[in-house]
Structure formats: structure tokens, C-alpha cells
Image (cartoon, rainbow, N blue to C red):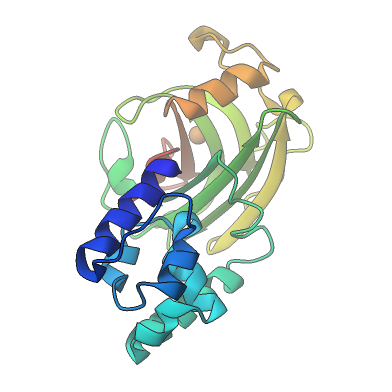
Length: 242
Ligand SMILES: [Cu+2]
């Protein structure tokens, strides 16, 4: 965080020639000293949750005065999308362990697939509560959806199942929800009791901490299977934003 703020000051200071100190918040800097310095190009270097310029825009601070009409419209559209994304949206998923990834056939392994299918997956790992709250959306699949899982494996590996997110194949643990026909969104909370393995890859059933560690390491992917592509039609590696 400190690194990001320092970077921001440096960029904004290039055009403003106003001396900033690190303990001034970026918001204060912009309102009081650099209304013209922090341009959208600068702001776009930040992720949403860390973007001090966004806060200014929303709160009507200094940044707003230099924000053009089209930029304002873009921001409103983005806000609308966030709101439309639903209840488990940005606020609940904004923790440091948040993962938000886009699923595509182009991420499939061992054979890349070019399909119309797309999807989004968000997960928040709470290691204290030993819970993973997730939201999976998929649409335009070329085959009827059959099941979806988190798997243990790197981006160029086909690993085994850690947990079921949904299934229509009757093969999940008791209580596994059905996968609605696309386009659809499924949400849920995974607990240690939902972890089925994979034992051959070193995660025994119920070993939540090892799953959390694998997610942090980028060794977990989400895969949505369809009747046309039983090995998976769309997929994304957690922690890799596209
Ligand atoms: Cu799977």
C-alpha cells in the first residue's frame, strides 16, 4: 500500500511541481494541491480498491473538477456494472484475499478450446473462519453445463477436484447444488467439510488450510464442464486477472 501511494505522489508531482509528503493522504494532496495533476491515465494504473482518484471522483473532490464528461459517464457505467453484479459484489469481496478471474476456453488444458463460453469467478478466502465465499457466473457455453469445480493444478496442468461448486451429474457430495443452464450464476460458501481432496496430490479431505495455501500460490483453478467438453469448456487460474 505504501509503495502504491508513493508511486502515486511521484506521478502526480511530475506535473504539479507541488511537494508532497508521504503522510498526506492522496485524497488530501489532490484536493488541496494537485487538481490538474492526477489525470485518468494516472488513475488507471491503480486497481479499483486502491485508486485514490476514484474516491475523489465519487466524493466530489479535486479530481472531479478535471474529469471530462465521457470519463464521468465511464465511471457511472462502471458503478452501474458493479451494482448490477449483485449483493456479494465489490464490498464483500474487497478483502486482501479476493480473487476475481475471467473464465475462457482459451485457458483450458491440455487442449486449448476456442468456444463462445465465458464466465467470471470471485472468491474470498477467510482463513480464520475457514470459509471460501464464491460467486461463479457462466454464459454462452457451447454445451449444456454439467458441473463446476475448483481443481488443484497450475495453469498448464489438469489436476484433480478440490471442491464441487455445482453439478448436474449426481456425483458431488450430499448438498452440492445443481448447475443452472447458462447463463447462470451460482454462489455459495465452502467449508473444510466440502474439501474432498485431492489426496493423490497431497490434500486430504477437509484440509482447508492447504487449499487456502494453494490458492495463494496460484495453484488452484476453476473449471466449468459441459456436455460438449466434458473435461472443461471454460477455465481460469485463481489469482490471475485478465
Ligand atoms: Cu472440474
